[in-house]
Image 1: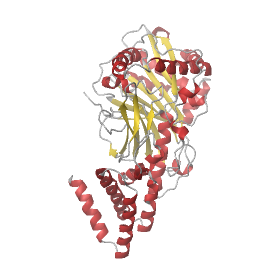
Image 2 (image 1 turned 180 degrees about the horizontal axis):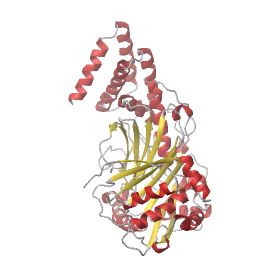
Image 3 (image 1 turned 90 degrees about the horizontal axis):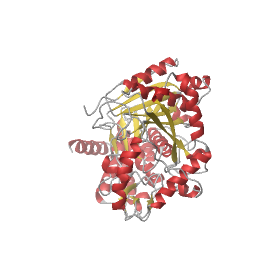
Image 4 (image 1 turned 90 degrees about the vertical axis):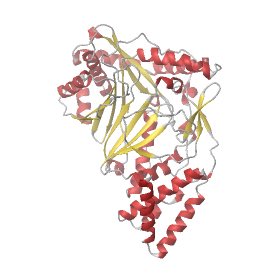
Length: 500
């Protein structure tokens, strides 16, 4: 509270120090801001305070008042906060299972981060989020309970940015009215967005993060054009971006199920905090791609084969089958503009005794991956997802929930040993690339998997991230050794251990 009062005092001093004509311009500016805000009194007060803090930041950093008022123009609010929230969105087929399992803390949270060349100014990041959210109405929502399904309801409120203070991908509290299902965090030069998977997948999350950072850079004085995955935040939302395209493309023909035989799990005591640690391995994206090409494999196949070896190193039992889940972006197969969930997965498996040297197992891993992502295979899984949802559509939610918690909390987790999700190379406008050092992508852990692996490449750096659910270091130590054996220079960073 004292910090907020100090900020207000600083702003009042800043205002008092302006010439009379400039104070008049500031007063006229805030009258215009007021006309754009027709929301609850407390939200309105906080949003006006955000404008004051940003204007103060500009004053303290030598930005001329004319330029500052132009960058912060209330026109960037559009009509978003001047109209009541009167829309809602049904969940897509892939998202409907996520909220059913929330009491088991299976939040299915993932994180995307950009590391900038300068330390983040939180005052401007807050304004960037306020200006950006109107372009993503599907994100400006809260989860609510219907009779048969959860649904997403529009919410007109202030969406805050927060300093990072806890473990990455911590549970998002969606249990109270008006709660949001994403968060924006900052730490030093890092901007992170964490999403409850009910909202979006990695592709949609990347578009949101790039658009947010582009708007932040504009407020810092660097104009970033729309395109290459950056949306014009002052443009009108496209209905196709919030479409449920699972239902659109289902054929009703042959379908495949999701439940497989239980997979062998890695060893190590499970942490009460999920994840308890995140480790990042930074390598040259060109060098990693060349290492894969030299073995006539994709980067995803190469890393998946490496993960089999890492899993074996982290196991006491040396019999059973290791199953690795590999998410597949369905946008590669179907024309779509959706920013909602539009991903399924392939299941790659090897018996523990078959896991040997990298070059020995890579051909089989690559073969399974190529087979698992065939268009007809993905179509069958899509049909199965929609069929499953439709089969229980008339079952009341209070009955669905306990059943889903058993199936998802036990069978679902036990079907896989771990996951590797590769977002590939993130393209961005040159103006943004000049201000971004790298990115990383982190998957939240689930109930049993001791490690989850995610990969993203940006600006020449590929970052392989491992989210841990145990202090046993065997998995990441073997990963580091394998990357080095490929001839790669590896930079290792990561979080402290939590929960021990």
